[in-house]
Amino acid sequence: MNPMSNCSSYQNKYWYPRVAEDQHGEFCRGCGLEANDKSLPTNLLLDKINNDGDHTIKNNSVKDFQLLCHHCNKIKNPSKKPEDREMTQSEKTNLRSEKPLMEWCMAEIRGSKDGQIKFDYFVSEGSFKFDISPETIERRYYKKYLSVHAVSSPFTLWTDQFNVTYILLKNRESILDIDTHTPTPSIND
Image (cartoon, rainbow, N blue to C red):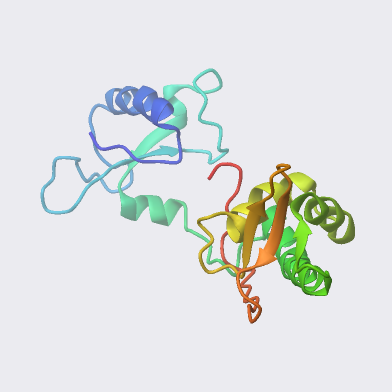
Protein backbone atom coordinates (compact mmCIF):
# COMPACT_ATOMS: atom_id res chain seq x y z
CA MET A 1 0.00 0.00 0.00
CA ASN A 2 1.43 3.37 -1.00
CA PRO A 3 -1.54 5.73 -0.74
CA MET A 4 -1.34 9.36 -1.73
CA SER A 5 -4.03 12.02 -1.84
CA ASN A 6 -4.89 15.41 -0.51
CA CYS A 7 -6.04 13.82 2.75
CA SER A 8 -3.98 14.11 5.87
CA SER A 9 -1.80 11.08 6.59
CA TYR A 10 -4.15 10.16 9.45
CA GLN A 11 -7.20 10.31 7.15
CA ASN A 12 -5.33 8.39 4.46
CA LYS A 13 -4.36 5.65 6.93
CA TYR A 14 -7.96 5.46 8.07
CA TRP A 15 -9.72 5.46 4.67
CA TYR A 16 -7.32 3.62 2.33
CA PRO A 17 -7.58 0.13 3.85
CA ARG A 18 -11.32 0.46 4.33
CA VAL A 19 -11.85 1.54 0.72
CA ALA A 20 -9.58 -1.25 -0.56
CA GLU A 21 -11.57 -3.78 1.47
CA ASP A 22 -14.92 -2.36 0.33
CA GLN A 23 -13.95 -2.53 -3.35
CA HIS A 24 -12.47 -6.03 -2.80
CA GLY A 25 -8.85 -5.22 -3.44
CA GLU A 26 -6.22 -2.62 -4.25
CA PHE A 27 -6.94 -1.71 -7.85
CA CYS A 28 -7.84 1.39 -9.83
CA ARG A 29 -11.62 1.85 -10.08
CA GLY A 30 -11.07 3.64 -13.39
CA CYS A 31 -9.01 1.20 -15.43
CA GLY A 32 -8.66 -1.87 -13.20
CA LEU A 33 -4.87 -1.62 -12.82
CA GLU A 34 -3.85 -3.57 -9.74
CA ALA A 35 -1.52 -2.14 -7.11
CA ASN A 36 0.82 -5.11 -7.44
CA ASP A 37 1.02 -4.94 -11.26
CA LYS A 38 4.76 -4.49 -11.88
CA SER A 39 4.31 -3.25 -15.48
CA LEU A 40 3.66 0.33 -14.32
CA PRO A 41 4.45 2.37 -11.24
CA THR A 42 1.13 2.08 -9.44
CA ASN A 43 0.76 4.29 -6.45
CA LEU A 44 -2.97 4.24 -6.01
CA LEU A 45 -4.54 7.44 -4.84
CA LEU A 46 -7.40 7.76 -2.43
CA ASP A 47 -9.96 9.80 -4.37
CA LYS A 48 -13.01 11.56 -3.00
CA ILE A 49 -15.74 10.68 -5.50
CA ASN A 50 -17.70 13.94 -5.25
CA ASN A 51 -14.59 16.18 -4.85
CA ASP A 52 -16.10 18.19 -2.00
CA GLY A 53 -12.75 18.33 -0.21
CA ASP A 54 -14.17 16.98 3.06
CA HIS A 55 -12.13 13.93 4.06
CA THR A 56 -13.12 13.93 7.72
CA ILE A 57 -13.99 10.61 9.25
CA LYS A 58 -17.21 11.80 10.87
CA ASN A 59 -18.71 13.29 7.67
CA ASN A 60 -18.01 10.44 5.25
CA SER A 61 -18.45 6.76 4.63
CA VAL A 62 -16.37 4.25 2.71
CA LYS A 63 -18.73 4.68 -0.27
CA ASP A 64 -17.56 8.32 -0.64
CA PHE A 65 -14.07 7.19 -1.74
CA GLN A 66 -12.40 5.13 -4.44
CA LEU A 67 -8.87 4.12 -5.38
CA LEU A 68 -7.50 5.49 -8.66
CA CYS A 69 -4.17 5.23 -10.45
CA HIS A 70 -2.40 8.48 -11.34
CA HIS A 71 -3.62 8.38 -14.94
CA CYS A 72 -7.30 7.90 -14.04
CA ASN A 73 -7.06 10.44 -11.24
CA LYS A 74 -5.71 13.01 -13.72
CA ILE A 75 -8.60 12.30 -16.08
CA LYS A 76 -11.15 12.65 -13.28
CA ASN A 77 -9.44 15.62 -11.64
CA PRO A 78 -7.56 17.56 -14.33
CA SER A 79 -5.20 20.08 -12.81
CA LYS A 80 -5.72 23.65 -13.82
CA LYS A 81 -2.89 25.51 -15.47
CA PRO A 82 -1.53 28.24 -13.20
CA GLU A 83 -2.88 30.94 -15.50
CA ASP A 84 -6.35 29.35 -15.40
CA ARG A 85 -6.73 29.24 -11.65
CA GLU A 86 -8.00 32.12 -9.60
CA MET A 87 -5.45 33.91 -7.46
CA THR A 88 -5.64 33.37 -3.73
CA GLN A 89 -6.18 36.34 -1.42
CA SER A 90 -2.57 36.03 -0.35
CA GLU A 91 -1.37 36.21 -3.96
CA LYS A 92 -3.62 39.22 -4.61
CA THR A 93 -2.14 40.98 -1.58
CA ASN A 94 1.39 40.21 -2.78
CA LEU A 95 0.67 41.47 -6.27
CA ARG A 96 -0.97 44.65 -5.00
CA SER A 97 1.29 45.52 -2.09
CA GLU A 98 4.60 43.70 -1.90
CA LYS A 99 6.63 45.77 -4.34
CA PRO A 100 5.28 49.18 -3.21
CA LEU A 101 5.79 48.23 0.46
CA MET A 102 9.39 47.18 -0.03
CA GLU A 103 10.16 50.17 -2.29
CA TRP A 104 8.71 52.45 0.40
CA CYS A 105 10.87 50.68 3.03
CA MET A 106 13.98 51.25 0.92
CA ALA A 107 13.08 54.91 0.35
CA GLU A 108 12.47 55.42 4.07
CA ILE A 109 15.85 53.91 4.92
CA ARG A 110 17.66 55.98 2.29
CA GLY A 111 15.84 59.12 3.42
CA SER A 112 16.61 58.68 7.10
CA LYS A 113 19.56 60.55 8.57
CA ASP A 114 21.15 57.41 10.01
CA GLY A 115 20.31 54.98 7.18
CA GLN A 116 17.91 52.82 9.16
CA ILE A 117 14.29 52.59 10.30
CA LYS A 118 12.74 50.84 13.28
CA PHE A 119 11.18 47.50 12.46
CA ASP A 120 8.07 48.46 14.47
CA TYR A 121 7.71 51.62 12.35
CA PHE A 122 7.99 49.54 9.17
CA VAL A 123 5.23 47.20 10.40
CA SER A 124 2.82 49.87 11.69
CA GLU A 125 3.27 52.48 8.95
CA GLY A 126 3.58 49.86 6.19
CA SER A 127 0.38 48.14 7.23
CA PHE A 128 -1.44 51.49 7.32
CA LYS A 129 -0.05 52.87 4.03
CA PHE A 130 -0.48 49.68 2.00
CA ASP A 131 -3.55 48.14 3.65
CA ILE A 132 -1.78 44.98 4.77
CA SER A 133 -2.27 43.45 8.17
CA PRO A 134 0.67 43.88 10.55
CA GLU A 135 0.65 40.10 10.97
CA THR A 136 1.18 39.62 7.23
CA ILE A 137 4.12 42.02 7.25
CA GLU A 138 5.65 40.42 10.34
CA ARG A 139 5.10 36.86 9.15
CA ARG A 140 5.47 36.88 5.38
CA TYR A 141 7.67 39.83 4.48
CA TYR A 142 9.91 39.42 7.49
CA LYS A 143 10.63 35.84 6.46
CA LYS A 144 11.07 36.73 2.78
CA TYR A 145 13.16 39.92 3.12
CA LEU A 146 14.49 40.34 6.63
CA SER A 147 15.29 36.97 8.17
CA VAL A 148 18.76 35.44 8.12
CA HIS A 149 17.49 33.08 5.40
CA ALA A 150 16.75 35.96 3.01
CA VAL A 151 20.26 35.96 1.56
CA SER A 152 19.36 37.79 -1.68
CA SER A 153 17.46 40.55 0.11
CA PRO A 154 19.00 44.04 0.17
CA PHE A 155 17.90 44.47 3.80
CA THR A 156 19.37 43.37 7.08
CA LEU A 157 18.34 43.75 10.72
CA TRP A 158 20.17 44.72 13.84
CA THR A 159 19.07 45.12 17.44
CA ASP A 160 20.50 47.77 19.76
CA GLN A 161 21.29 47.49 23.45
CA PHE A 162 17.71 48.55 24.31
CA ASN A 163 16.33 45.61 22.29
CA VAL A 164 14.97 47.86 19.52
CA THR A 165 15.22 46.24 16.09
CA TYR A 166 16.19 48.31 13.03
CA ILE A 167 16.11 47.64 9.29
CA LEU A 168 19.00 48.87 7.19
CA LEU A 169 20.46 48.19 3.77
CA LYS A 170 23.21 45.59 3.45
CA ASN A 171 25.14 48.09 1.34
CA ARG A 172 24.51 51.56 -0.11
CA GLU A 173 24.16 50.26 -3.67
CA SER A 174 21.48 47.74 -2.75
CA ILE A 175 18.75 47.31 -5.32
CA LEU A 176 15.33 45.82 -4.85
CA ASP A 177 14.50 43.01 -7.26
CA ILE A 178 11.00 41.77 -6.52
CA ASP A 179 9.14 39.01 -8.27
CA THR A 180 5.65 39.09 -6.78
CA HIS A 181 4.67 35.94 -8.65
CA THR A 182 6.97 33.71 -6.63
CA PRO A 183 5.40 31.84 -3.73
CA THR A 184 5.86 33.52 -0.40
CA PRO A 185 6.01 31.80 2.94
CA SER A 186 2.73 31.56 4.74
CA ILE A 187 1.85 30.73 8.29
CA ASN A 188 1.99 27.03 7.43
CA ASP A 189 5.60 27.23 6.20
